[in-house]
Amino acid sequence: MNRPTGMPRRARSAVSARSAMVAIVLTMALTGCQGAYDLPLPGGAAGGSDVYRVTAEFADVLDLVPQSSVKVDQVTVGTVEKIELNGWTARVTVRLPNSVKLPDNAIAELKQTSLLGEKYVQLSRPAGIAPVGALGNGDNIPLAHTGRNTEVEEVLSALSLLLNGGGVAQLKVIQSELSDALGGNETQIRDLIVQLDTFVAGLDKQKAEIVRAIDGIDALSAKIAARRGDLAAALEALPTGLKVLADQRKQLTEMLTALSNLGAVGTRVITASKADTVANLQALTPILGQLARAGDALPKSFQLLLTYPFPDEATNTIRGDYTNLYATADLNLSTLGGNLGSPAPSVPVPGLPTVPTLPLPTLPPLPPLPSLPTLPLPSSPTAPLQSPSGPSATTSPCATIICLGLGGQGGRWSSQAWQSGDSSWMSLMQTGGSA
Image 1 (spheres, rainbow, N blue to C red):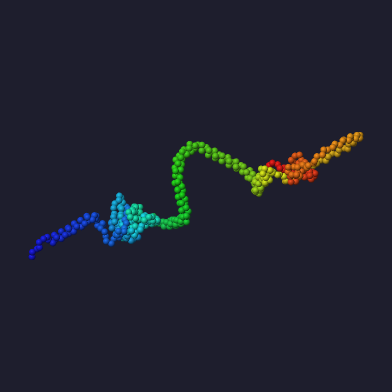
Image 2 (cartoon, rainbow, N blue to C red; image 1 turned 120 degrees about the vertical axis):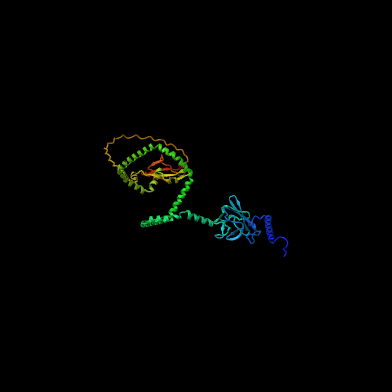
C-alpha cells in the first residue's frame, strides 16, 4: 500500500492550530481588544444603546473586575465597564440603562453576593438625606459617597490577632486571681453589690437632674469658649494684680488688724448700749403704730402743708388771669381753742373800783348864738353813681381791704351787716383783682 504524498496528519494538525492562533491574535490586534474583560457578554445588563455612564471613586476596590454586576435595590441593572487608577484612588466606570433614575448624591458601595461569592457595585439613594438632582451621563460619585463592606479575610485576621497575640491566654490567670480574692468574702461582696444597686437606682432616679447639670455645664462651657479672649486677657493681667497685692501685703495686714480692733470696739459699744437701744425701740413702738394707723392721711397733709391755707382745689377758682376769693376767719378764742383741741382759758376780769361822786359846778347862762344867713344852694341834676361792675354797686364803708366787724354777701357789702355791727368774724373780699 502506497502512502499518499504530502505532509503527515500530525504535521497538518499543528499547522492548523498555529494558523487559528495567529488568526485570533490578528483579530484581537485589529479590533484593539486588551483582554477577555473587553469582550461583550451575550445577554448582559445595559447592553443596548440607551445607556449612560457614571464614574465612582473608591479607596479600595478589592478584587472587583470588569463585567461585574451593578445592582440597585438588589436588582442587577448595569455592568462595570472599566477600572482604572486615579492617583491614590480607583475610578470605576459603570454602565446603566436610561430607565434607572438615581439622585445626584447617590451612594456606591462594594458588596459581595455570598461569603465566597463575587463582588458587585451597589447603588442606592442616601439614607436620612433628601435626594438632590438626578444622576446623568458623565457624572462622578465622589470618594465621600463610596464605601465597601468588611472582608471575611479581615474578620479572620482580627480574630486570629485576638486569639494569638491578645489577652485570651490570660483569662485563666484572671479567673484564678478573682477566685482567690473573692474566696471567704462572699458577705462583703454581696453587701457591696446591694449598695452598688442602691447607688445605681439613685442615679437613675436623678437622671433628669444629671442631664440638666450636664446641659448647664455644656452651656457654661460654650459661654466660656465665647469669652476665651477675655479670659486670656484676665489671665495675662492676673500676675500684675498679684504683684500689686504682694507689694501691699503689709498695708493689707495692718488694715485687717485695724478692722479687727474696730470690730471688737463696736461689739463692746453695742453690748453696752443694748438695753438702751431696746428701750428706745420699744418707746418708738406707739409712735410707729400711730403713723401706721394714719395711713394715707399723713402724706395728704403734707400736700396742704406746703400750700396752706390754699388746698389743691384752689386752682379750680382761677379762670384765665382772674380769680375770685371769699374767705371767713373766725377769731373767737373759744372756737380757736376747740379747733386746736384745747378749751380757751378763761381770763378773770377784776372789778372796777368805785369812783366817788364829785359835785358839779354851777355854770352861768350862755349868751344866745347869732343867727346865720341862709345861703342858696346851686341846683344840679342828681345822678346815681355807677360802678364798673354794675349799676347798683354799693360802696364799701371800709377804707381798707380787711374789715373787722363787717359781713359780706356774694362779694358786695350789705347795709344790714354794716348796721348790725357783728364783731365775731372777719371778711376778706377781693373782686375783680388780678390773679
